Image: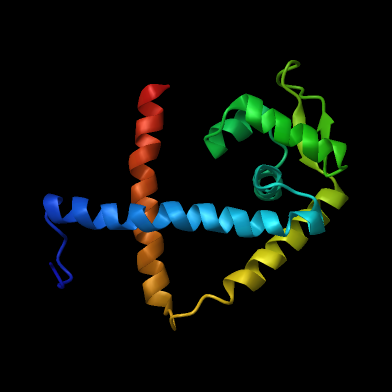
Length: 159
């Protein structure tokens, strides 16, 4: 095991990244389950939450644009948009650039819903123990971003 600040050999890196995957999968599933337990409070599934949060960051967007960013199928994203629209959280507006692909925007109710969801998530995240430091979280974020880059490259190769 390499305890230095030197980059790992490819073989060591492969084993250590596998350890991260072994933790990320169960963490992801448990976190989704926990978030969905709060769903009755806001009425948003994890999929709708993802759409609302994406629109919070960069609206308006078309369903195909959202699907690409979220790396999800257009059909799934369309169902999530339909659900959000039925709840009054998003609205569909004409797209001057492309008539067949409408723009999706957050409504004030949608903005309030995603704000409440994010506040609940932040409160839950504040309960994480372990005396974590900024440096540790920065390192963790760096690792996950590098792992994501690998799979984003794979997605681009298949398009």
